[in-house]
Amino acid sequence: MTGQSTDCKLNIIKEIHDNIWGTIQITEKELQILSHPLLQRLRRISQLGLVNMVYPSSGHSRLAHSLGVLALANRVGRHLCEIGDITREEYIILRTSALVHDVGHYPLSHSTEEFFVDLAKKKAKHETFGAHIIRNTTLGNCIDSALKETRWNRDDVADIIQGRKSGSMEKPAIWQLINSQFDLDRMDYLMRDCTAVGLDYGRIDFSRILSKIVVDPEQFNIGVDIKASTAIENYILARYYLWDIVYLHKAVMGFEILQGHICKKMNDIGEFPGYDEILEMVDNETYCEFDDNYFWKTLYDSMKKDNDIRILGEMLRDRRPLKLAYEAPAPQDPMLSDPQEALSNARPYAEDSDIVEDLPSKCKIPPEWFFPRRVEISIHDFLPLVEEEIYDPAYERIREKAIESRAKTIRLFNIGERGEKTFAGYLATNPQSVIYPLTKFKKQRFRFYTHDDYKINLRDFLKSKIEK
Image (tube, rainbow, N blue to C red; front, side, top):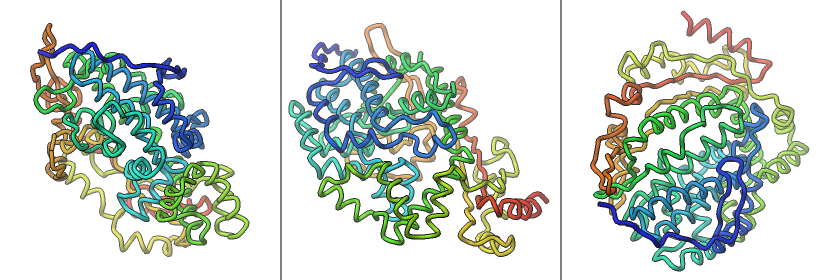
């Protein structure tokens, strides 16, 4: 039986109106965090980066998204606090982590992030970089103040936003709600991004999902009332369609590849910072200036100094992306075969490195205008990893084992009249779930991008080789 808590009320001093979730309530300490320049910087970071080159209405900011995640943390956190699944202290740190979870995002969000990850690998991922900001700036002081009545501090929040066990945090559910495949971050961007681009896939019954989330009484992981199964299935499928239609849109990828190439060119001539340089910007707290405006200003300045950058910059500025010359699908339906077998059979030409390296010369394309990309998407991508679910005091990740068991990770419970929880199995292994037959599905394409001038040559050559 779940105990009932009555000490869940917070001192709300401000309300912010949101077009997705309505009124968002803010405490005094959260307002101090929100007012910090490093959080206000997110007002000048576009949530969807260059997606607005394809979907013009998608101009919302990372700050709007962060407030949306706070709104969801308030809903689910208060619910869990009232039924006794989390404490008031855990409710507070959940809200704090929700508000600051995206503080490490780069200008234009994920497209610039890929450039820095190429330079500095995993430590440049926005979650890891955000943790560095939280630990090493005055924003961390605001977070410490917000958590003063709890046993936690900025270091715990830094761990939580990376999706890992934190200090004395006894319940993985807290960080799972911030960073897992079934978290409040993804719930907000699904609803917010779909609304912004004009798609109805985000019309999920979130009220039902949020009100049916529980904490596993044994391992303290996130669980869900089995009555919400249909709503969760809809959520998983909606995320799949959002990624396939919007984030992996052929033109969106054309712009993002172009922008990443521009970042590298600007970095080569010393006009755009590398990873070590942005660490210095954090240390002296000038990182609040590193926003979308910074990128565009740096680009325009660089265009005056370098002719190659001028050509690339004019393409990005004037909405002329790299063009998709050819897309090679997998040669067979992966639903009908083993996914690994389908993957290997799909690569006879598209990923043969020797042939790909020779393609530009064979097609009379300058090598600098040849951009091959492999694109994969699977229902598995939207199911939490076991490594995100199992409570491990040493926080040891065993990735291969985790991936094998990935489909077992959304726990379902029957909830009794007095709140007692009985484990009812996993969503994706339940034969009654629509997700069950889709867990082996993988959609993959091999895309070849180039400048518009070379599109026809590359397309004709690839068709002659692949469509035999």
